[in-house]
Figure 1 (tube, rainbow, N blue to C red):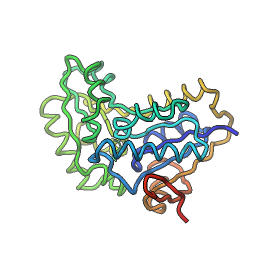
Figure 2 (cartoon, helix red, strand yellow):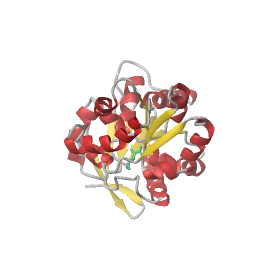
Figure 3 (cartoon, protein in one colour):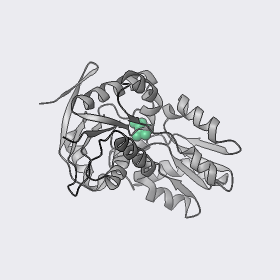
Length: 272
Ligand code: DGL
């Protein structure tokens, strides 16, 4: 049996990463976990997000995942190092805001970064800034409410536009020529972001680079699926299953069966 790839996020955000993974390696079997009972993760304490991430990882490993993609910047900030220490035999791929490619190509030296409060507070972001952002000014914004809008499927409504305008207008006035999407929910509003920032501003979605890194680790472990058959995908949510399954065709470009799970203390169990 070909080992599955486990992918998780607080909600639908990780589907922007999964979309790139499906394009890069369509034959790989997938287990996707959306912790929609707890979304958003961004304003929560790091310790809480770490506990969620551990339980989700255990759930995915129990169901046959061999490699895990933490398709969430917030969970990566809170838990990636802890997960690697706790499950040393498991290869993990995490997310960090793509400050490096932004700093390498900006002409104005002004870069906008959109991410959650927890991501900005984490050591991972501090280390990325220290290593790569020398000589560049980073303008940061947490886009309050944007994750919830995207969870509701409101990708192009006046309320969603207002949140993005509030974040991006002041950055444009200060001369940004690059926007880094440091939250995996945000690639779903790239069309709206482009309308606001115009064609002269580069918008960086890290998902294709993360998909390539995911594939490298699968190949290195001999777990890569090949062949013409599309790999199966199973979806789990701690929120409403119908809600996630209704969003899959537009967010991911494919349909899928979603099963509901419940949190029982710090454990996750299949519902029903
Ligand atoms: N998609 C997530 C991220 O990349 C989490 C958003 C949230 O739940 O606040 O940060």
